[in-house]
Length: 112
Length: 113
Image (tube, rainbow over all chains, first blue to last red):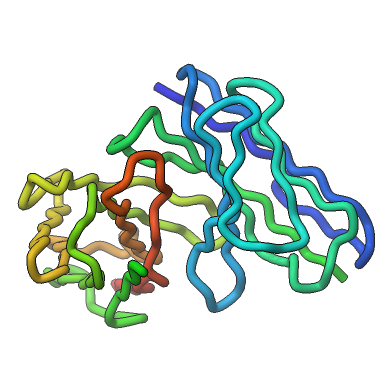
């Protein structure tokens, strides 16, 4: 079965600082990968998804970017964090269309 | 644009009660629907996946039904326990290959002993 590693679990960053969150997946090959954000009082918002190396689709224009340098690695980045970037970030994966979506344990990001 | 709504936003029940959580979606052209559980400060755990051709799925005390034509799904929890306390989210995948799930905001369930 697949395992999703996501780190760090919590992160406190000042406004204007850079960000790099990493997600790696084990136990599957060529997965679909997703970054979601859950802000306080709001539902999960899809940020980016990827169906293959170097293929990134952005759902919401924002201060963030994503990259997929390897088949099972998905990175979420920002050059300068904003207060509104605070939230709970979740990496997800599916083996393919119609299959279950599995999530990592998440990163709680607080931008101060 | 597909929208997913979950009612109620919060629910409190005594232990042992059977309960139903509701999920509705605006576009019936979905690929599948998935129910998740989220504990405070934790990631999401997948509970049940219903393909668009199916009407229900069962796992232990959980039963999820799907009525695509009316745009509704229900999650039935039998004999609720305090350990069932969590937020339950439903999500649909639109009828397009490679598109990610669209989530409702969830129902927060509290089961008292």
